[in-house]
Image (cartoon, rainbow, N blue to C red):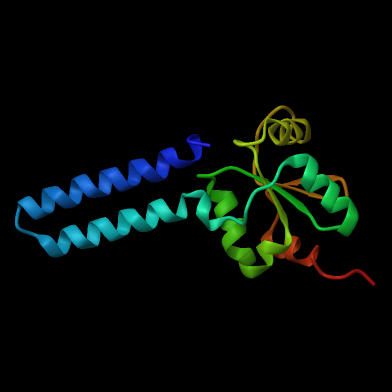
Length: 145
């Protein structure tokens, strides 16, 4: 759990240190701007922007029941952030598995990607898709005729 928060905390600490340096030089406006930039970066790299993660077994069970895709992700992954942001509110309809919190989820990703933990890996109807286009993922949420 703590590994997911390392990068955001480092960004907050670095931003705070730089802001304090600017304040000591008499530039409070620059300090505020720097701190805001680093806080924004920390927020984007934190697990908070993703829907609540569940375990891989529960995600697979729910996916079989309702046909929704399962997304395997990890904090700090730029491609995962891209997928999450481009999906917008539709992201809440997917089942998200944080591979840093769920070793079984990491094993599923490795099995699908030749031993690599390449994320995002989206599983639709039992078929893994590595780093798919967000528009394609959104289409998978549409009701099938």
